[in-house]
Image (cartoon, rainbow, N blue to C red; front, top):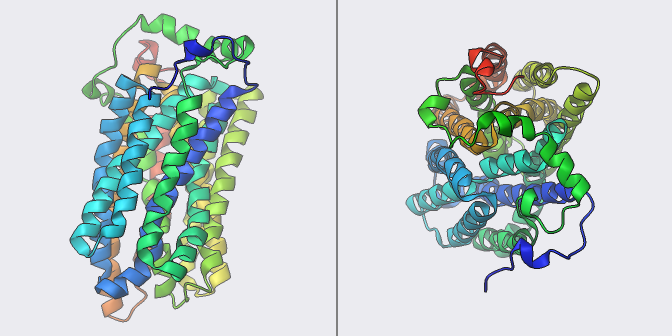
Length: 442
């Protein structure tokens, strides 16, 4: 049965601060997205034993997800710009929820890799869609905080997933641990289909809130003169586009190392997973705090008169420097010290990536936001694929030689974001393209 459109409710009462309810919906979508994807990494120490996987085998299964995810970010980013956020996110949430449930039927390396590939394709739409929704619903000064809100869903999802997934696993086995979380997306869709419409046609947005939302868009709309969505090759000619790609490509692999490999890393350190459960979720809580801190501080700096670019770059510098705190973890096997250092690093990562996520909506006009966000997600996917191949190779090779298997990985995880920080500062700046109106001034 078709859902009634916004005009059918023209006399409905308005919802105060409706944009923040939209933000909470995007947050909930991201939480569910991460619970579904975290299931395999949490069960990996047990599935490795059951199916006799090496770290390289597990890396290849994880890479199957990342290949689809990196391609899907660009493809679905373009799709969101063409068919809209409401319809696009509806289709992709149905997709990945079904795939998550079907993973309970897997029975070996190839079936797990196939289901992870399909899951990655479906889940890849979340960030381009959410970034586009933020650009549609939030004024410039609130976009960083709104981005932090939905992006923090990855941290919350990663934090609660161990308690949900492992609780199900220890009682009923690994197959229900895939099946049950897969139902959450369908519950979310009920609310999404009822609540989400573009602000200009929404039946529950107040006139005052709508005016605040659209006021920021007027100047850019006037300068666009109704142009169509730019071609990818035109976007890729801009240094600002490469800055947004690098911002994700040099940082997201570190967070994905934590989400996909942290349980295996702890076991390699000699820590039993049951006793190390607290360490699994502490870095995610720290990342959640980092997202909100970065969004709030950036908005505060803008309110105090800082230029938009300076406010964003201050948090990028903080994040790039702070992520080097991963490196000292190679010197200890103390669970709580490891958890603390990873927490500091993920807090700083979240500060960096929140600014990276908001850059497309800062720099580009509405019809390009999801496309650029998708390109940056593809960059993150390519970086993660390379990282996972190296992780599998180094950890297996060093484990066979009896040395600390993850030390080179952790050192690189601390240094690569620092290099990314420098490149972003050089590339994301006002250029001739800014004067021509191709990108916004920052």
